Length: 498
Image (cartoon, rainbow, N blue to C red; front, side, top):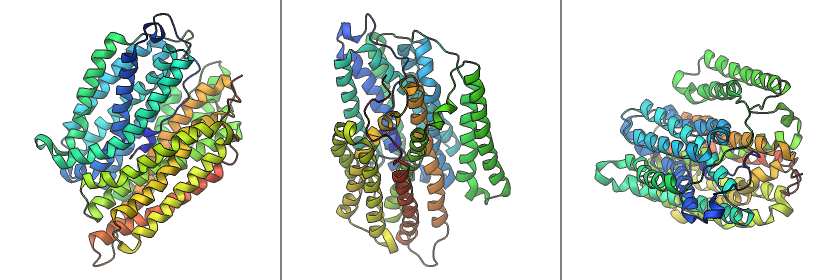
């Protein structure tokens, strides 16, 4: 898991415009190969999100990246991916999901190769943003192709396979990342974590060009490009001072920039109202925000996913720079978290229709308890053993499995059916923004603590105290998320399906 475990659990409600199976679809051709292609691509995207955090210290060391640059390598990917999700589904609906899927898959491979060739931090940040944009275009097509190509029974099996791929990527990411960094294959070190995407994408492109069916939406709507740009720019203006503020010395104009971002966000909502009045299809219909459960769900997602994303950045650095563990050993420590989430995710999905809200709150509180246990283990410069860390992270994974896979469905249960597609896209995007904001805000707290060590402190003391400083904030985030989940619908039943 990692910077963005957020991405690992990118469970989204596909747009309503994605229609029933069409002639010549996978139902007729019964092609398991086509499903394998989109699952390959999903695995690659999810793997890339989980693999980078373990390699982050090695990347920073070789490229001489500052803490702020390291944060942007992670947050830039997540933010770009979220931005791509805003319009990715619409582009596939209009121009063909197969065509857009293959094009974005090729772009993701090229961006991955460019990441592997990066020689300076700014180049890696830029190529990671390109990776995120390509992923944001690719992911909605996976859902669209599955929904437009299978009958209900086949669709259930296909999404079940997608869930299995998520779990596999969650486990494989930390292990593979740690192995590749430590193995230093061909002397490439951390660069192999990006090169590994290229052969996977090449196989998927060859097979996909032969077996994937084409599908489009029957109805086209004008794109809200202005709204998409305004929302992305507003989030960037808020996050930039958070990430760079420490390097800049927290100048007054950084706070002005942040305030301007908030004002631009307000302007974005005003503009979206005008789009609705003109009969257009906005990025975010402001009417949705009047639904208390949906607004609470958005805020809960920001805190919930923000805490997750920040955890794996700070944990990876603490384990390697503080306790002296290798990348491979760090991956082994993180794996129990993924295993715990896999164990409870099936339970969460099975019980969501009866106890969705209770599961979300229980999951968030369990993750807060896991963080409290972590704080107890690392406080005062302690160096806990593997099994104690594994236990604390395993408990956190149990909480994640209860909450994350069903969060979107529970939130959307209070949204009318005609708005479910748009609301699902907004919620999925906010999940990514929450991850980026968490990396920015909590990463700044972590690195500020690293820069202000007690005289004579050891590396373990410095990074242990920095990690311990972040954990109470993460606990507060999970508790806030639990409180904000109280107004959500009691179950994940399709109350809005009518």
